[in-house]
Length: 411
Image (cartoon, rainbow, N blue to C red):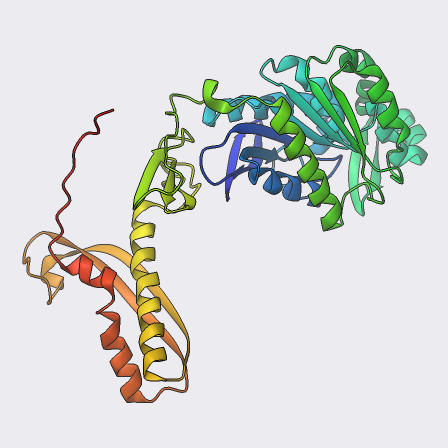
């Protein structure tokens, strides 16, 4: 799993901050997560649910609404309608960079926002809500004592979750104009409603109202004992597992949406390594080595940075081989080597700066390797281990003449 920080234009011109959680291997679906009122993409529910869904092969974009978290803009100038617009903008960005989301997930007011946005996103096949209000205006209960002052003065500063926010009269008017019940009734997607029976912020009766208004297929699951923000890891993990299992039934595979990504044809336990394009960005790859799978990519200036780049893998091969070789040698000798840490850096240098290089012109590749040894070793043992580092199989391979015959496959 890899987390890719990103920014994209919001619906009203501000830059929104997001995180794209990528699964290992080719994603089978993409999803969008909308956080709770005045929260951020780093909330417990947003981060844990999004990351857990990557275990199901689902790539998830979680983002900050305008004026919150890392996003630009003024929260006071936003309203529920602009939040819905931000959801649509995030979905469009996800479609441009990876694939249009087939799953929307929203927490609290974010749940109301994805229910409202679904009708504007024709590729959405499933919507999941967590602790969502049936009516967006329910959020005014969080600052009910301030509502008369907001209506009289046009705006007021209110305290929510320990922070001050400016709420305008236009925000209240926009909430009052929402026709959420009609939207839910017209929802053309599978619906999963998750709600805690003991939710003290948005009562569980809201889940009943949403369920009654929606058409089938629809499901309700009680998050027994959970608080509204799902701050307990077990609660957020339970919600994530439920959404992942439910989505596997209602969300189609990505093959029809990915931009030219080939079908993955890999033996269960390939001999050596197999590398297949994922379709995530320009350079995303999934690597199969034996029974293991991991991703590769290029840095964000050219790729999505969903995994190490090719030279990172080269350094990793040399570093892991060095560490393994030193530990095995010390074990055989009975030396008190406790641990090994290997630091590596790749660069290109002029040949005339490399005394040990055969080439004397142009540039050559240099891998600087620093070995840290922990343990009660004497100077002679440390010197010998440094010599052994050059005898690790990968080091020898890099120094040997390498033959790489390449041919086109028959299929």
